Length: 164
Image 1 (cartoon, rainbow, N blue to C red):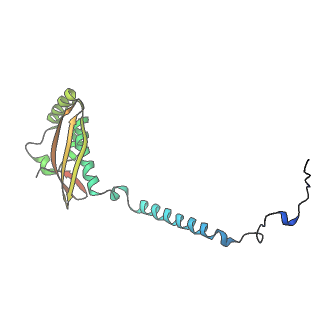
Image 2 (image 1 turned 135 degrees about the horizontal axis):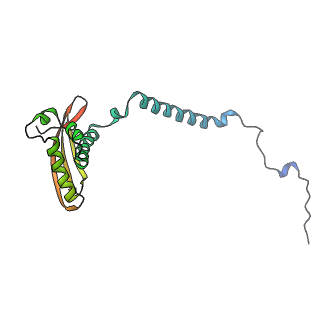
Image 3 (image 1 turned 135 degrees about the vertical axis):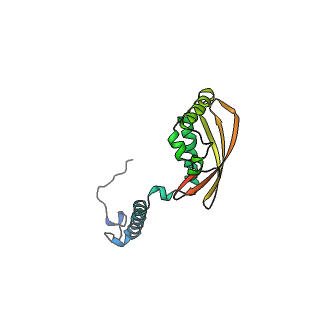
């Protein structure tokens, strides 16, 4: 037997589509969410424009940047970066290396044992002073890890390595 199907439908056969068109009130939660998202994005944009990135960096991070500069300078034999990372008192001290002495000392160690690697440093900032414990080793002598303690002081807005 085959069932016959008619193409005609009766009004009771179709699902009820409600009262017709939806009002704008049905979209109100989405409009509110979109408005809130736009406000948040505007606040973030304004804060980035009014407050430069260097001001949003914590003192711990700034100290780490200076320590990184010291070790990068030693690896690249960049005396100016090394000198600029130290306080004036240290730079004027009798034991501070000259550009030639700095290059000779660091080149010999780098050529023999590889570049300095700093896998970890512990930073403790207290006011305008910071104590940093640097865990370091050379690329080719990972089994000979050393620890160096550095003291940094804040001079204006900049942190500098300072032995005293």
